[in-house]
Structures are given as C-alpha cells and as structure tokens.
Image (cartoon, rainbow, N blue to C red):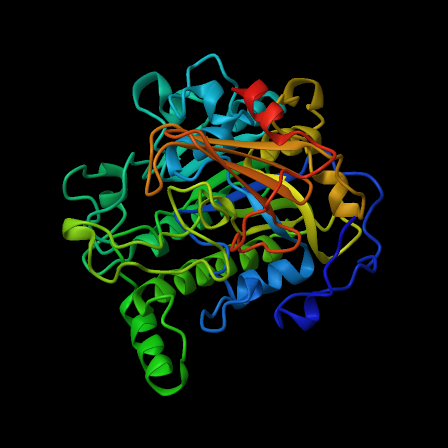
Length: 432
C-alpha cells in the first residue's frame, strides 16, 4: 500500500496508517451503502485535498476517519458516461458512453438482489422510461432530472419542472439542502432496514449560485485574506453547502447507530470546470483551476479525470490514511458487490474491488483507460495509465504524448521517449 506523509501537505487529513479502534475482522453482512456524487467538483476543491480557501470540515473529517484516495479517477471527463460507469462498473465504451442499455445490471439492481431497500435522489442523466432509475433497480426516486437546474433556488427547474421536488419545497429553498432533507427523512424511516442510497447533488455544476449566507461569508474572507483567484466565491460557497449537508447525513447515521456499518463513498462525476461557460451559464465562470493539475472537465488531462474519492467504512476498514493507490469510478460496482457478498454477480472487466485497500493492502498493477470520442476543449482523445506513466493520444491527429505522473503529476513536461518496460500504445490500441 502506497501512503503519503499527508500531514506535511494537507493539514486536514490524517497520515496515520495505524489500525483504528478494533473494527471487526470481517465485513458486517450486509452494510448500508451511501454513494454521494458531486457534479463537476474538482480534485483540488476540498480543504483536505489542499485547497487553502474552501471550508469543508465534514468531508475533511470523513477523510481523516476513512481512506482518502489521492489518485482516484472518473471513468470519463463528462457526467453522462462517468455516471453510467458508476452505476454499472463498466467502461463508458461498453455502455455507448452513457446510453445505459437495459441489459446491464446497475448498483440499484445489485443491492436489490442482496435484499436491500434502494433509493436514488438527485441527478440521474442516464435516460427516461425504461432507463429511468425506477426501472433500473431503485425502489424510491426523488428529483431525478436529466440536466442541470436553471437556478439552485426554488423552483429550480423552470424548463423541466420536477413535480416531486416542487411538492416538498417553497420559494427561498436551496436545492442541495432540499435533496438532503428528503434523504434524511427517508433514512430515518429506514433506520431499522438495510439500504443503498445513491445521492447525486447537482452542485457545484453551473449555473454557479451559492447559498446566500455562504457567499456572504466567503466574500468577507476573500476580501480580507485570500490570495488565490480560484475557486470563485460562488463556487466555494456551493462546495461548503455540500459539505454542510454531508455532515447532516453523517450526524443522522451516528444518531441512528448506523454509521459504523455504512459504506460511505464520496466522489465527483468528473474534474472541475476550468473554462468560461457560455450564454446564461457564463456568470462566475471559470469556477476553478484544479490546483496543480492540467486541464479540466472535458479533457483527458489529469484535471479532467482525477477526482476526490473518500471511503468511510469503520466496521470493515482497519486503517485510516491518504492513499496513492489508483482507483476508478468503475471500481465502485465490484466493491459494493463484495461488501454485499454478491461478488459473483458484481465482477467487472473494467473495475476491481477496493475493499482490501481499506486494510492496507496494495492494488494489483493494471491499465486504466479513458476515451472521449465526443470531443471537448481538446477535441477527441484517448488515454491510458499504467503505474506512474500515462499516454495521451489526440485522436484527430494520432499525436502521442507520454507523461511521468510520478515525477510531474501536473503534466507540465512530456517525456522524450516512451517509458521502458510497458507498451502503453499497444495496450491502448488493443483496448480500441
């Protein structure tokens, strides 16, 4: 297991790899599953990932008490294909980059197979009708729109109104808060049950509109002390509201005696937006710069695909640390399958369970692949990583660029020659 002396780099994170206080040696059967997905949250946009401005105490605490992965990846640099990978454990190319054909088992269906109650709250983006969450294994569905809101304040979706959401909200309500309110009510009803909840916040996706009290607080902080341009204060405020609501959920799980035996996974669907938006979405953009990472949402550079990834599972994990092991969105499905003793049904050709990493083990070496055939800020591209080395291919020109991410994670300098010992191009071509 590769660990970081994180205390010297990120004050909010825990570098210790010492065992936590006497967790059981086998997974409780079965645990609750809580998957929280932020929308367009960049790798460097939480305090525990090194952001000097953003206040994220609840997520920082979750990282300290769990495992914080520093080299975690979305399966794609855009939401729809990445979300399909989260739901199925399959590379986006197998699901037609987010089309989600009905013959692929989802997390909801996997959990139902194990006897859990299932719910999806928030952004879905994977289709309607037969492809809606109600028809993809989720017993309870709330506010599952296909797109981003017109405003984060009521009525939220003026062009695609959500009747269920409007029935529980009123003018002045903020979307992230109301999604959490619904989740809390549901989990309180399910306190004596075992469940899987997929909670997908729309934030901090554009339009950038922080909750007013958080914006006011950040404006005062930036005016008096802040030296860094990014993230913008509206974006920072949106992140802090997410953090605040994660804290509310953790508090409820603790009160209900469910926190220890809940597998909590927090991540983002892709890297942060680092370019100006267009039209009515333009205000306050670009929102972030992804820290030291190159590029952002839509690209296969590190800023577009590397994401925050925090796992908290006290009943099973024996370590608390920041890890350099490489994990990917496709790993969530087989990990949940293993936790629910459904490993035979959850095997994935594109992902592997990370549960053993929560106990200090090391991951098996493997190739990680990405493709962006739909284009983006850098056009159509493909990429592969193995160990410290990454190959980026511009698919419109077939130009190749090799990077040593172990030496320069910011991709600021290309390698003069391909790395020795592994043929990244051969692996990428075989994948194609």
